Image: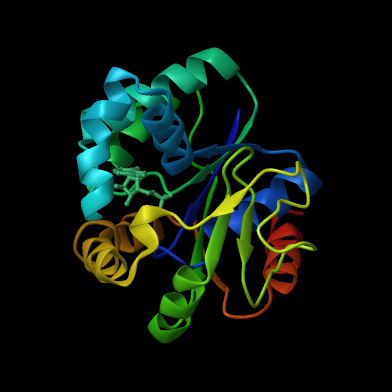
Length: 213
Ligand code: AMP
C-alpha cells in the first residue's frame, strides 16, 4: 500500500492537481470533501450530520471523517492512495497513522501546496464544479469548452455554496487554526515536500509527478 497526501489551504488547487495525478500516475483519489458532498446529496445520515458544518465552513467532526475513510479503505483495499483534504486535524493524522499501521503501511509523502492568500481567494471565487462527476474548473484559469457544461461528462457546472466570500474567509481561518499544524507534524516525520502551486495546474502537476518518480 502506498499513501500520499495533498495538504494546503482551501483553493490551493488540491482537487485540480489530484485529478491530473490520478489520471497520469493512477492513484486512487480520496477526497473527503467529495465524499461528504455525495453524502449530502444522497441524504444519508452522515450527509445530514455533515451539512451544517460544511455550510458554515467549519470542520465535520473527526469521528465522522474517520468512519468515511476507514469504510473507503476497507472497500478499495490495497493500492495507491492520494488523500485530498484529509487529514485536516492532528487527531485525524494520528488516527490515519494507526489505520495504516494496521495494514502494515505508512504515509509515504505529503505535498504541501504553497500559494499566497490573495491568489487563493481569486481561485475559490472563480471555481466551478461538475454536479455529476465532480471535475473542477475555473471561470478564468480553467474554463470549460462550453460555459456551464463539463468537458468530461456534459454535466452542469455549479458554484459550491461554501465558495461564497463569507464562508471562504472562515474556511481559511479554520485552515490556519486547525490544519496548518500538520505541516510541522509531517515535517518532523521527514515526509513533507513543499511545491509551489501558484503556477498553472499543469506546471504544478508536472512538478509533483517528477517528485513521485
Ligand atoms: P473540501 O472540498 O476539501 O474543501 O471540503 C469541503 C468541506 O467539507 C470542508 O469545509 C469541511 O466542512 C468538510 N470536510 C472535508 N474534509 C474534511 C476533513 N478531513 N475533516 C473535517 N471536515 C472536512
